[in-house]
Picture 1 (cartoon, rainbow, N blue to C red):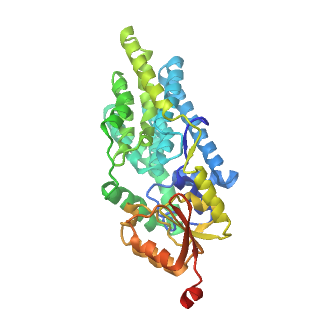
Picture 2 (picture 1 turned 90 degrees about the vertical axis):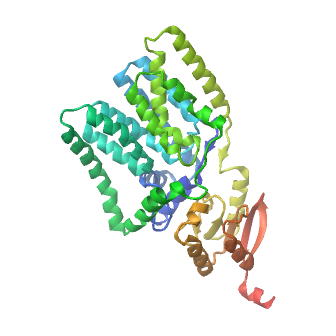
Picture 3 (picture 1 turned 180 degrees about the horizontal axis):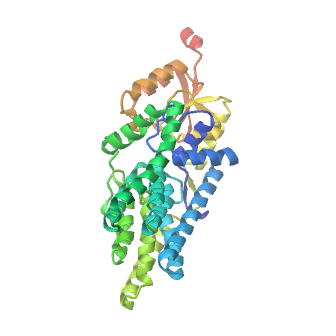
Length: 418
């Protein structure tokens, strides 16, 4: 994995780092996602420290767990050859679909596999636990209720009892974070950001919807066209609902929960008793697609921690400041410079966050009150012109990297004399 492009999503450093500084999720940090992955990262970073290397190690451990679960589940219901091929196919698909980088969709994969396993084994209470853990990782896991509901309807004479077991397992797990949030006094904040904003507002927000080109669409769905030749209908059902999270914002990494089931479906075709010509065609199609996809990801660079980011971090550290505010740039700057945002809550500089409620007004008022020693500005845009006007009035800005400015606070007395 070291030889493929790694995506160090800024939030995966910034949010756990701030939580380790005592910031509360949802109350002090605007987060549209559910909290389980972040809480797990907090524990991991608490033990091993916060950094890019630690993030990579956590990601690769998670991918290794996913590979093992693919192997384990496939071996449970098919055979060792199919399970070995499934594990290999999953790893390659994970790389192709931008899985070499931690995001919530990658963290859904183990819970999707466990949900499939427990449903097949008719362990409905454990299936409910797996479903709840997946939902607590990201809200789009709710789509998996579709194949689960079909199975609960079809596979048992005691349907009501199975429903009770499933939902009891889910309820008991979901009760824990709700009780914790109530204790911390952030239940209303969680509802505002994860439910009201993340579920009800965000999918239809202006600028949020991003659709693929025809080439992107064909590339992403080519494995599905091959997998549909399989007769493993439950596997295909899990693959389809695992891909639904790609809407409304098209990105390849949103396909991650679907990939283990695509790998299993394709492996069962190759090791099935179907005619040899079909298996050869499937194998050739898979190899050509995988080779093309893998070559696009070759390179040991790290997104969001390019050399210019490293140099910017050094410039900020030279100011010897503990508080900072980042405008239209990566929030991982806070973690990398061991600083904290000057205002609370930290709201991402993204149009759908800024346009929600009266967030622009809150940010500007807080910034006027706190006046941090330094401000970082990425490429200037027209999303929040009042913010740039404020910075230009009270700060001295200079370009330290391409289209990135580092601004020092003026002495107000000196400005008044001038």
